[in-house]
Structure formats: C-alpha cells, structure tokens
Length: 106
Image (cartoon, rainbow, N blue to C red):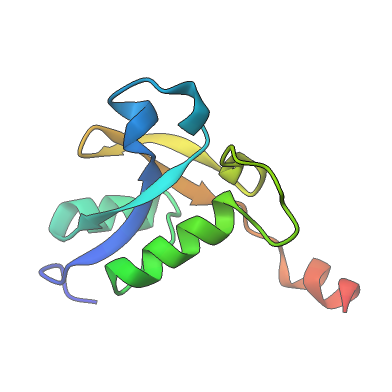
C-alpha cells in the first residue's frame, strides 16, 4: 500500500464529535486518510477501506446490524474509539475475533 494512496477509515460520527448530539455517541462515518495518517490508522488497528462507499456501507452495518430495530447507532458493541483523530474525530477500531473462536462457532 502506497503512502500516497487515499484510503478510508471509520471515525466517531461528526454529529457527536462536532455538534455533541448524544444520539450519535456510538455512530461512525468514513474519513479519508493517506500518508502518515494512514500509517497511524493502521498502527492502532483501524480497518482500512479502499473506497468511501465501502467504508460507508461497513459503518452502516456496524451501527445498525441485522435484526436491530433501534434508531440509535450501536457500533460500540463491536469496537471502540481510540485517541488517534482524523479531522478532529476519534478513529474507530473494530474488535478482532480470533480465527479459533470463529472456527469453533462454525
């Protein structure tokens, strides 16, 4: 992956990060990263997406998983926010499930 490439990561939703709307406390949205920002995002374990659309779809699935009927985003159930910020918004890192656990569930 080239440092000059633009990729995307999920960050805390701007409605909470900028406007302090508590409904979006656990919401996520995509942000572009490249260069040092991309390297830092990878270093903290953020999932990196090739396109904005891919990141946006992933974010929606994390906030509103299948069979969830609520209106409040719940991405915190599958990850956490770290101190690293992009555009002033904390980067989201998904929890990693070890392959051994997923193999046992199958």
